[in-house]
Image 1 (tube, helix red, strand yellow):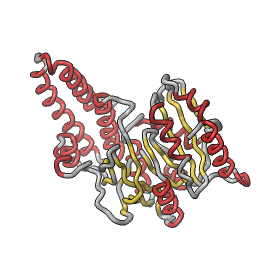
Image 2 (spheres, rainbow, N blue to C red):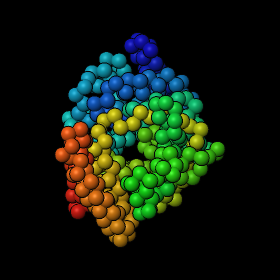
Image 3 (tube, rainbow, N blue to C red):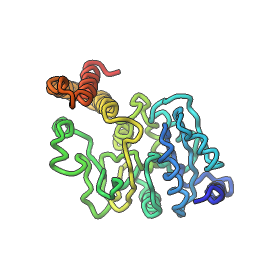
Image 4 (tube, rainbow, N blue to C red):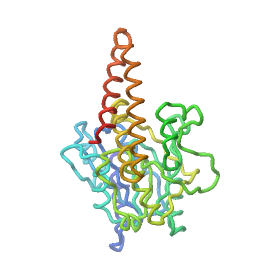
Length: 323
C-alpha cells in the first residue's frame, strides 16, 4: 500500500467513524515501544481489512527511539497519537488509549499482530448479538500458522507448577491455553494481544490495573469482569497472527511474567494461595540457579548461565517482596 493510498484509506475510515458526529463502533488501541518494524504491517492489515464496522485507531507510544513516531506521522496521517516520554508500562498506556477514544467496543491489539476482516467482523458481530458478553477474543497463531494461544482458566497452583517446569507444554501445545473447540466457548481469560471489550463493561469494572505494568493485567481485568457477571468468550475461528515477544528478551520477560502472576494471586486469591505461589517460585528458582551455577565455569555456557542466574535471582527477590 503506497503512502498516498494509506492516507486516503485512513481519512476515509475516520470520516466513516465520525459520520453524523457519532462515535465509532470500535476503537482500536495499540501500544508501541520500539517496535517500528511490526507496527506498520499491523496498521496496514487493519486499514486493508475493509471492516463492516466503523472504527478509529489510537497509538500510544511509550518513548520509542526507533523512528516509530516519525513513521506514524509520515505514513499514517490523521491517526491519533498519545506520546509518553518514557515507558510507562503496557497497562497504563492501554488505559490512556481507552480514555482517549469513544467507540462502543475497545479492541486491545498488540502491534506485533496481523489481523484479518473475518476475525474482527466475527468478534464485533458476537458482541452485537450477545449482550451478556463483556469480552471476546480468538485464536492466536504463530508466524508459521501453528497454534500459539486460545483460552485459559484462572490458574491453580498445580497448573502453575506445570507451566514453570515446562511439563505442561509436554502435555499440550501452548499449555495452559486450549483451542479444541468448533463453536464459541465461555472462557476464563484470553490474551490481550487481540481482545475486544465492551466499553459498558469497562465502565462498570474499571480499566486495567496499572500496578501490573505488563503481564497479568488482562487476567486481572477479565477476573473482575467475571465477578461482575460478564461473560468472556473464545471464538475458535477468529484467528490473529501474533509474532510475540519482540520488545523484551526472554530473561527480562520471565521476571515480569512471574511478577504479574504473584501480584494477581496477591490481589484476587486467598492469602495461602498467594503464599504458596511465592514459595513455589522461590524454591524452583533457587534450584535452577544452583544448576546453572555449575555450568557457569564452562566457557560455552558462561553467557547463558550468567543470564539465567540473574533472571532466577530476580525471581527469588520478587518472591520475597513484590515490587
